[in-house]
Image (tube, rainbow, N blue to C red; front, side, top):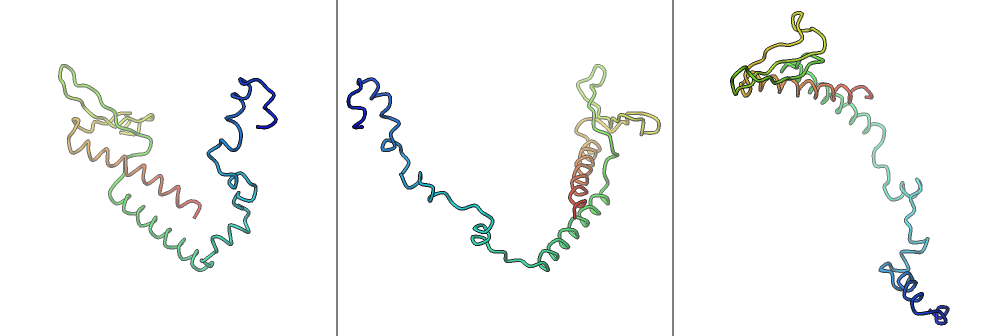
Length: 147
């Protein structure tokens, strides 16, 4: 502040808020010694490796077994055909909606659409669940590829 005594008051008022003494941060936090060491050696000292190769191999084997079991469960419950989705269409002169499987290619006996049922029916709920299982099966397969 001593250096600014000769200046006009407006300049002093503009510069004063930026002095370190006015900051809410402690001076110790600004020192380079206060910055934590993130080098690999320091990280190993902070978090030592507690697992050996046998533990990692066993955990990987368990993960593969769980994923393969889940994959077989999904296939047993049934999944929707690949490349299709559910489409809703309003019935003519009615307030109800019909639900169809829709595909880009004619995979339903030479057609691109397959009637599932009226909206809210158990057949439509099962079709929605089958699509959800198909999407989960894709994610399980993606997890199994690198293992």
